[in-house]
Image 1: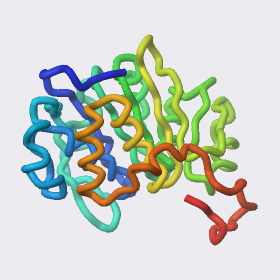
Image 2: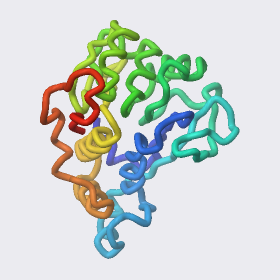
Image 3: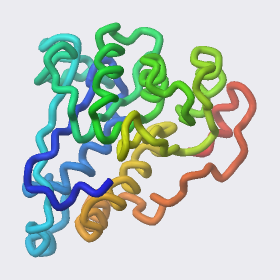
Length: 238
């Protein structure tokens, strides 16, 4: 789904409540695509000629209330919307990793409704299990943090959980997509690949260079090693 040619700001929703901050690092990748890039973007002398190809975006931070929302490590983010009043017809929706069994019930209703109208949903880590609990992933392939694949299958057997760094599936309507990733490192590479496929490639490449990210690693959709045994955390290959 190409989104780079529109000048109407894309609406990017971020579910920000009891999540892992690093899982949402892809926000910076999206921010670097806008006409007002972040301080970590490449020098403006390199970026300026590409501004005509930048993509305006509006970022919506969604939680169960407008009170500051907790995220790791003991940090708070001020939401702009609640699950009740956030728009459902978003261009992009991001989910980081919470405790998937203790998410707010209103968030599940929001995800069910938003999935019917939102163009792209991207999840990282247990964000995939959060989305799965809403029923949106039933009958689809998805992934989550490798150490949670077993529990994910028990909690949501209606989903085909696969051991990949990220998975891309069709969404709930024609042209919609759902991207699910493993741990935070997998999620960053997933975001790089998603943006490279859908936005100005030169801006994406420059943004990755400014953040010193592994631009070439974006294509590594599969793990280097087989899934380790239960609780073999030392053997994890992210």
